[in-house]
Image (cartoon, rainbow, N blue to C red; front, side, top):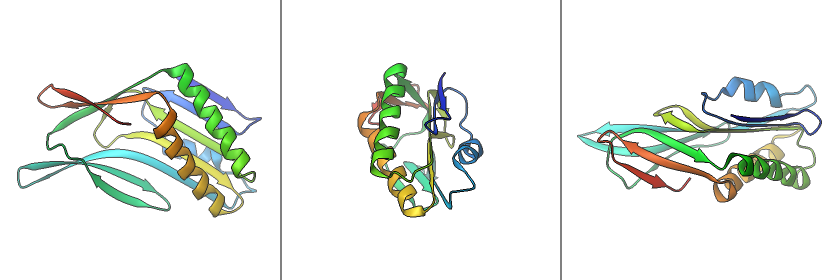
Length: 170
């Protein structure tokens, strides 16, 4: 587990094999001077319909929700995440710094990512931000998750119930 809690910068960065706690993330970014907290969290669900398994990703936050279908039609047992941990933490810090340059009113930022085996329906990533107004938090959280997916060295493998597996883009 890698954890960086920086009260002077207002960042809480966590890479862990433990389950992610959404309430702790929201508590960290919440502050009496902020009127807005935006949160992105991601979990994977698998829908069984008419003997066909559709792999879906459910992305939820307080500003959007969608279900994306994967092209793979197999039962997934779990996702296995691996990371170059020290580099991932450095890039998370850089993303937080970039957010603060783009949106100076952002007060606190929380970036948590799971490693190891993540069961179906468990959260794999949480990004939260707070500021006096919602527009900045919505933009900052979107920017953060886009940058995480593009730049952070975290890899995801789908492990299927038949014991086969496939590396997927994070």
